[in-house]
Image 1 (spheres, rainbow, N blue to C red):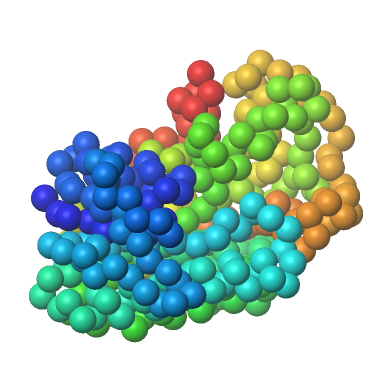
Image 2: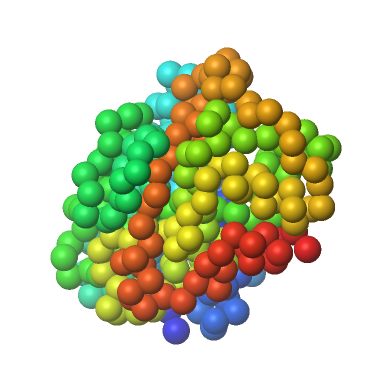
Length: 300
């Protein structure tokens, strides 16, 4: 059993991963802005601005999982917010990689979170694999700089980078936002509705992180998406069907989304197929490979 240090342990994936690891018999500690050593999951303090991490956080740790980063869709993308999104990922990764490299022989595995934003926000017929080059927009630039920090890890430490898609969970993230208008009978596709949503069930993404921690054959970059991608229109329609709600409203114009969300609108107006073939070949068995199964579990 491993002792796992998680940064971003209070986030959507971090909470679920912590629960899974504990249930599997591993021990877990967190890094956070405020120290809390009284809970069952001890949280040690770090300060990105001061480039400080409490050294005690690394005691007997075998595995580091980096999930730190300001929420991509939490606030409008002002200049300051975009800087925060970038620096919260790059600086946290740089700090953790530096600490891991100091502890050769102790740290066995480093699992770094990334995002499918690496490939760029575009709508094409192309299927993107882990071997494809990066895109050329803001989120792609963030992911490149994020992942470049991971590549500074000493080669004696096994490294896994997971490019996570749209995580579906009833607790937080995209799904509650999609459900709200559909519950009131005003759900609608965005733009053409043909753009792909590279989704994954919360249970599957945390299981993939667990696999990355425990399976010594897992090394390199993997896409954290389900093997059956769907369009924005298909996703909304499937949610409405699961909730037994009507689905007939006209599509939301892209111009309206851009007015409301600014540059961030591109996250929902564009999208292409991201391949899950490499992830499946680990082998990794998705518990929820199809959207109908995922929504039945999350919304029943």
